[in-house]
Length: 489
Image (cartoon, rainbow, N blue to C red; front, side, top):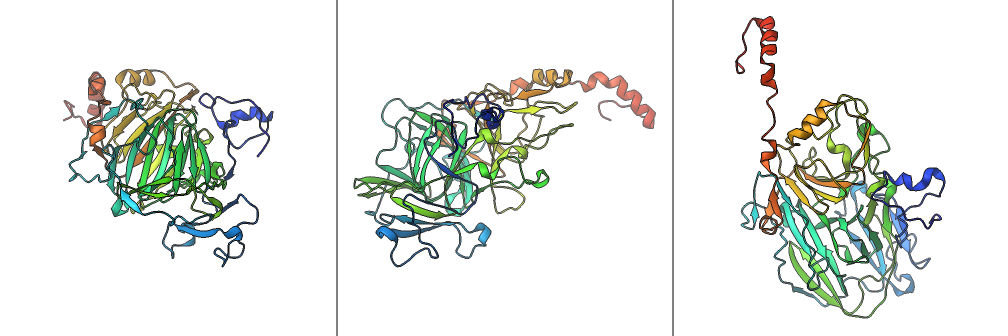
């Protein structure tokens, strides 16, 4: 790893990761200064990592005898005959294979989670109302870890159908102890909002702080520890697909989230003979198996099906430098394809510090009705694009085709004066989970005391400016065709 200075940047208030380099006065560095781990960089690569040099067999994946008596275990995430570009698998060389467990038993349902979002399910609700939730409280009584603190907000589809999307929040006050979790339904995109996560995976550890995200794929076992105390955050889960980088189109080779900025863990193993509980989520139900050894005993591995993390302050924003705004697709960090080639199942977008220099252009979000469902959160800072006060940890939701936009006062102020060259979203990162699918809302979110509606009265004072130009319009139209215009006729 490149040399690092002792200075710890304030990542909430820097404009971009590049500012940490002090115009080249200090060496560039790959990770935040307080990150204790080393990583490999790249997205979609075929990686390899070994704690003990010479462990990974060369020229074959599963020799008759693996060095040090290890077991070879393959994890596949695609059809065996999938094209090379979409074939996902990894080989792990471990002290004991994952099959060494004592069987499965049912766990009680988590009443705060949901997996079936079809409207026939009485536990989900359909609503065109713009909804929002104040930050969900982190429990202070009892021990609540990452798994028991999962709470579902909204989603679409069903995991057994292998296509769908679900959004969760998590609130945790304690680390997972002798316990690992496996999501057998889909991929988790985890967005910490308060408190760092020290995530141990079979492929090695990831240290993920607010302002960073991580993706842990289907079937990978992991444990979450809380090095900074209680933690809260958001999760986007996709079924039947995987997150990938969006195409860049006319942008060319660089921009948005660059592949070199994604970080994959290096192997780190532990050999401990102690009781472990492995919690599985399958079809939205929870099960557990027990075993007498650590599940994180992988000495070496290679493959392209691996967890990864990304620092959102490295995102390369693009935008108009002449007039008008480009569609919000320019804020897309990761996307997940659906079976409809023209509409993604899910996009993960961020709104972070950037410059706005376009001329003669209305700056705030214009009034719009999108085909997409939008569920939004705030990691830190302020965000002015919502219809009401929006706090870090909050959730805001608009279903497809519901109109939204700013209050009249903001519209009037933005329209009255030309926009200056300005930095927007300073010290802030907001994000959006966006989908072509309509969402239904869970009982947990629907009945939560944190829920409130966007106040529609905020638009009551939208002024009819057009009518004040009636005489001018009449004169124009009379010159065109000699007609008198009255109330649109």
